[in-house]
Image (cartoon, rainbow, N blue to C red; front, side, top):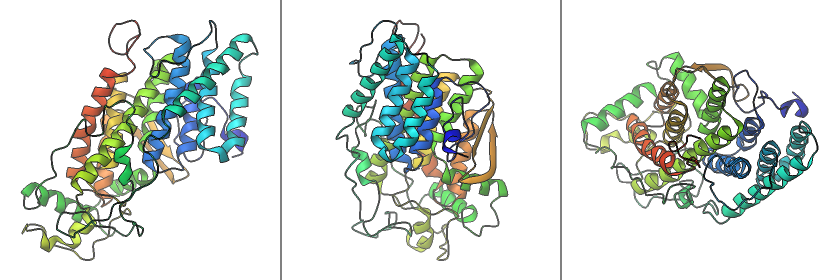
Length: 421
């Protein structure tokens, strides 16, 4: 696939991202797919932040012209008749080029191709100016937002239940310790919605979760069905932004939503994912709960006679280097699922997801959003890197986060419900 083909508009299929549904995309969706491909080189949490910045810039640009919703920043003005399509293209391009300067040639070519489909006119020129202003405003709003510099965590003890570095860790200890301090996009603070503590080590609930992951999550497990191996490996390589932005675009194509609605919807979805990540790391580093790999090696020390140790346990998927409770993929994906459901309903839908570069030969088909989040929950347990209770905690946390964001952010400008135009 050539670079020219890679960035072809109209729902192009491209490397390192997911296969969209057939159908004509608008430019908001075209640039959402370009965004997905661009940010996919980053870890899931920076991905979510950059996706939210991009989609909010696109929303702010389009909304300054269309006026269908209350704005996010409210500082962008547009001259009458400005092209919303040109504004969306320019906003997405400017944000992505700012954060990914090494991709400038590809991004510039994509912008040129997209803008070439719009006839030259004062409306196009005005739209470009709106997009540039929206991008600059969003970039400025996220300066010094806590996403840098990186900080790490090293435990001060090795007490049972306390997170310990695993083989994926470098010399500095737990990663993304600073992510709990990133400014949310919509939430008031990282601790606005707080989780109850993880299950007690001596409880039956903990023993059930322990024995499940021990049985099905080992790299050499004979109890893990082949399809659960597939989803574990697929979702180890495929994050919430790619999965649920793609699902949203496919649903939108099937229901015929407008350019303005798509800009609004994708902004909400990616805000929910990013704010879910911030709340996740606040809770992760508050509780500092150990991962199955550490727990199963040390099962004789937890005070529970139902948790036999296995010093040879090795998970199917490499354990991420930070505490386990709650599951990050579980929280981010359930945040997206809850927001997509709030916007589009619960189906049935026709959703097709693939990641042909990272996981070739695998295509997953879904009719309901819960099927996706259920697979992701299974993926982390059958991958051996999370207890089921980590997954349940993630769903509990972000269901409330997504509902709050939906009810309080980007409402319709003219009434008729929180997000009805």
